[in-house]
Length: 325
Image 1 (cartoon, helix red, strand yellow):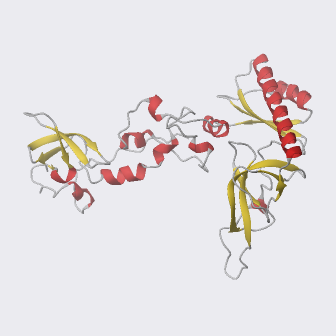
Image 2 (cartoon, one colour; image 1 turned 90 degrees about the horizontal axis):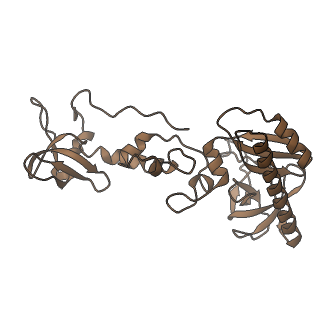
Image 3 (cartoon, one colour; image 1 turned 180 degrees about the horizontal axis):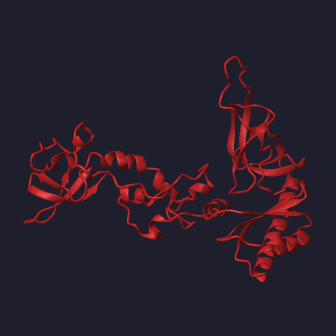
């Protein structure tokens, strides 16, 4: 069985956040994280007395009443959990691995046939994953499409080929990248297919706050949407930017009065342009905002966090952009 449906996925496999007052604490269970597919989700299973290492192939039970061959992704550790949990039955032997290879060949054949029939029927869909649930007598085909598609004839073609009940599941472009996997522009595996549990909203304002070039090829991921990693350091950039003058502001420096051209948030440096000399870079501590007439000059960039008006009225952070799903 190569289905991505988690073994024991349901209320019985959920671990509560903690015991309520007067309740008995759940027992400590040797949990191990396993994957049914290289780019699939990681599921917690009861390892029992088996000593397992990352990369081992194991046989686990599932809700369909059968067994599945999975790969250990997270080493065993004692954690509180509410039984019953999916169990690791044994380490996979040569016969189990041969069955796994046969299931993979059947899955690859079903996926190839599905793509061929979708193309023959001129359906504007991209089928990128097939899951054959032998024990449950069903097959799931996952696809991406920009619009609603009538695939009833395709379902009949697939059912006659795999001899099972066929389910078609449509996902978005981000979920497609998560399920397919790949290598990002950083040279590492995609975050979404390795460790990200869910997608966080990402906006173009995050790229602006980090002084990134707003080039679609630079800020977009494999899915064509804004990179998820733009979220990781956003809070640090926003907090550091509070201690720096904004671009376009008039400031006083040891070299005279000028206007801020750009700022280096991480190094806390400011490039100032003058009317009668070339631009120069100063540490943020050496730069002070020039206050409008009638207002006292702030002591420095750190005054942005102090009480009182540190910016002219009406000037503030731009509104948030619409997040990309």
